[in-house]
Structures are given as C-alpha cells and as structure tokens.
Image (cartoon, rainbow, N blue to C red; front, side, top):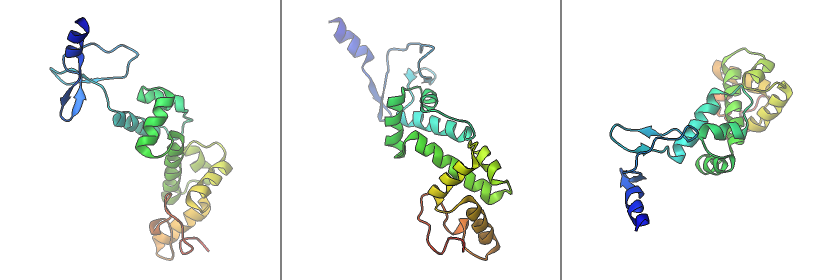
Length: 180
C-alpha cells in the first residue's frame, strides 16, 4: 500500500515530450550531478546528450592539457564505463579518439593561419614531443605538418591545392591535393 502511494508520487510524468520527476522536490546531494531547476518546477536532471556536450566543451577548452578518461567522465558526472557508452553512442568515437581529432584540427588551424614553429604548435595542442605530433598529424591528414602548411599557403596564393581545397581530417586526400 505504501509502495503504491510512493510510486504515484515519484513516478515520472511526461513534460514536453520527456519524462521528468514532478511531485517530489529534493535538494541535490553535494556529490550528485548538477541539476537545473526552473522556478516552481521539480529538479531536472541533465540529459545524456547534455552530459556529452558538457564534456566536449571541456575538451575544447583544455586542448593543451593532458586529459584522462576519468577526468572527462567526472565533468559529465558519470562513471568512466557509462561515459564511454554515452559518448560513443552520441559521437561515434571514443572520448580519447575525439580528443585527438580536436587537437589535430586545432593544430591544422594553427599551421594554416599562424607562423608558429611545428614544435610550438605541438605544445599548443598538448604534445610535448613534436615528432609524435607530426606522426599523429600525418595519420589524420595523410600529409605531414610542413606539407600541410605549404599546401595552405599555396591555396591562399591561388597557386595550388591545399587546406581550402579539401585537406581536412575526415576526408580522403587525393593526389591533386598533395604537395609535389
């Protein structure tokens, strides 16, 4: 009898197409995930997409720092194993793979629009070893960082193909877009 009464009070009700708690308003525990509360409404727990988005924003703002899966999962306020499942489902890549892609994209941007040395670009995106950065960059873009920079300069001057012509991370690099 008591369980039936509790279920009636705490059972989620659809609100705006999503299920949200309605009758029981409890203050969140200090260690619990942050919850949003609209005036006069019950606590709203962030969705899984919001948790993943929060972690992506964190990754983008901490490119130069060494991040662990544990630290990124803590930003999302979930366990590591649960975070991997949520992240992979939403982004189709593991958190670490995605973080490396973000670093490579920022490295490509720095190579294209600045005159920073390769070692400084590597440091700016969190790699102490410029050779390791170069190896990862070549795996991602099928061209070494120096070649990418040269191709970008040629593309800007109109003399060839380069970053503007399709040297992007997830695209296949053609023979035309490589530097001869």
